[in-house]
Image (tube, rainbow, N blue to C red; front, side, top):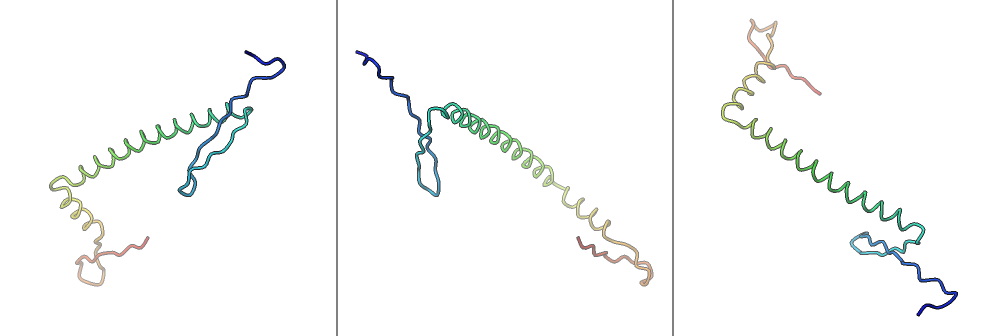
Amino acid sequence: MALVGVEPPVPHLYFRCNAEGKVHSVFVAAEQSEAIKDAQSARRRFQEVDAEISTENRAQLLRSLERDSSPGSNARARARAGRANLSACPRSRGHAHPVLRYP
């Protein structure tokens, strides 16, 4: 049974969000409901892409850490670093002293 001259109710939308540990509901006017729904979908997709990128970055980091910690690589790296920081001292009959470099 439809009432004559009465428009059907407009569906309402409430946007729920967390702020400072509390859940808040914000009324969204009917004119803005599509824009809010689109924004929510975009944010959800952003979070999915962000999670994918974070997962790949973590995997790359772990691979590089494993590669750096392989047997023998630390000794070689220390030897290279030691040679790179030594230079001949002109006042001490040619033996090497570490060169301090400040950033």
